[in-house]
Length: 246
Ligand SMILES: Nc1ncnc2c1ncn2[C@@H]1O[C@H](COP(=O)(O)OP(=O)(O)O)[C@@H](O)[C@H]1O
Ligand SMILES: [Mg+2]
Image (cartoon, rainbow, N blue to C red; front, side):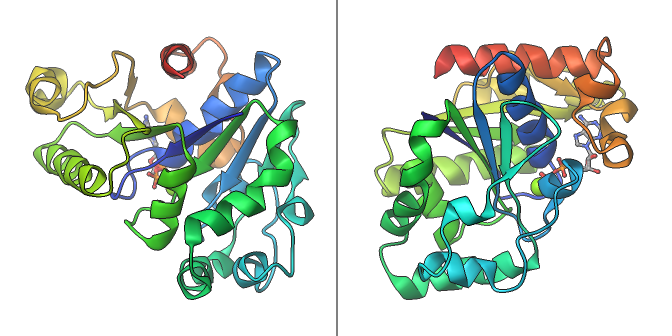
């Protein structure tokens, strides 16, 4: 199983949208995909129409009262399962910190599920927390949706410093341009960010499109309700490129 964390310290950059679409694309190819929604906002769970795990889930998981498989849910799509989140995940971070050895604990939680899946996607909350650290330790790649603005470049630079301090050489960092709005000049010519980024930025880009934003209304991955759309094509190209790197 390959583990892919979708991460950015910034919120609202397209993490959940890309997690949902790539996990769906993996499953459509006949791979077994698991998406773990780690964000207390539970947006990925909402998009797949799956209810949250219920009160105390974060703490119970970390303390070994619940197993991860207790939380495992199917989706409407064959081959694609979900571990949902809700506000109880606010405590996950604290519980992991209190328990000690957070990466070990997270690895132990996942271990029984590893044989059942080809890909595990983590839809991460936007913070550089104990949880994020543990996810980095367990992941093969970090997919970083990056809106082409100067502050996003700064976030990539900070991530590079952070990862080199923590000696995370095993982790492939794969930024890609997200929510690219062709009406904006710095979005149109993205060479400046490609040249200055501390990590090579993938070639595939996700444009800013209203039919992608509609995902919140449709509550399904883009290719399900708009199979021939530019958004569906962009996620397809991104998945192909990411899969080639794993
Ligand atoms: N490529 C896109 N084009 C238009 N809207 C988008 C795009 N990607 C995400 N959105 C919208 O932007 C908001 C934030 O996206 P989301 O994927 O939830 O980001 P994050 O998980 O990083 O907070 C959501 O309302 C989502 O529908
Ligand atoms: Mg999100």
